[in-house]
Image (cartoon, rainbow, N blue to C red; front, side, top):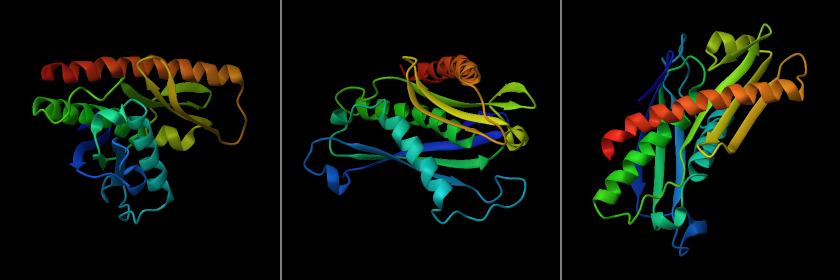
Length: 208
């Protein structure tokens, strides 16, 4: 379980001994994600999701991010499903799911290596994500719901430990922002993600 402020997301990994049809016979695996918010994860009840647009977008983002740091040829023809269930939401659930999903995936791969199912660790790099934004003229990190709701600019940033971007989602509300502002927000995000990498390493150290 990853906890960032008041946001809590439970991340787990399951393995299926088959791949999607477009990968059959290719000798490589697949990583996908499922994301859901429990009805009482928010202040007022959120109806159970029926696979609507926001959920689909977040699931694709999580899967895309984790695949970016995985060598699919090592997986064999297996599918790994990363389930990200939001127990409590206060902003930043998608970035928390990516950061926690990496730790869960590493843990799963580590156990499969110990069992001799995987020959080597499939992960090529670390990955983590955070949100940054501007609220009332101030640059803020890891926006909570109230900050996100009032944000004039809001970025979600996904990076590897090679300081390379997997995804940048940035939008403005009500007014535009400059390249200088974008650069400053990305620098703030990178600083925070470096701290997340240190926490991930500390969490996974017990496995080695």
